[in-house]
Length: 139
View 1 (cartoon, rainbow, N blue to C red):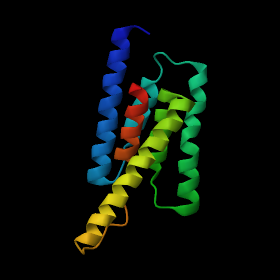
View 2: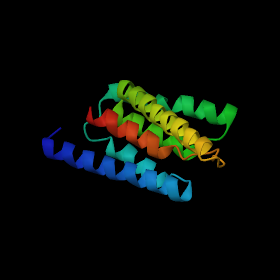
View 3: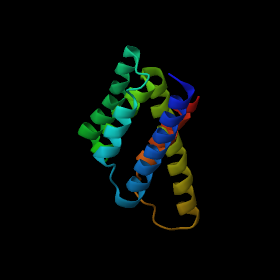
View 4: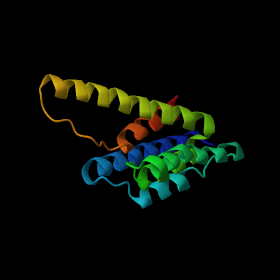
């Protein structure tokens, strides 16, 4: 893929993940159109070995079905990002995003306990997953 096309793809991928993060933070939703555009954005430079990346969403789907607390937007976002990243980078993205969220939640709860205030129980997941996906994409 030509360098200019790679740069355009990277810019759009970054903007779409930022948009997903902002809407998840403000409205608690990841719009379907963002996930669809990310999936379409994976077409230039697509290779068949990237197709299994869609299965990155499977653990998120299972967690939502059996434990709840996760929206379908997060699942669709990871499926679309899996197409863009492929399986190895998608696994890295999921682990990095979930690790970032875990670190944030632990620090948040410690601060709430020190300040003796009530801690929130739910957090938007898309900003953390987006950070993990960007990290995996640019590595």
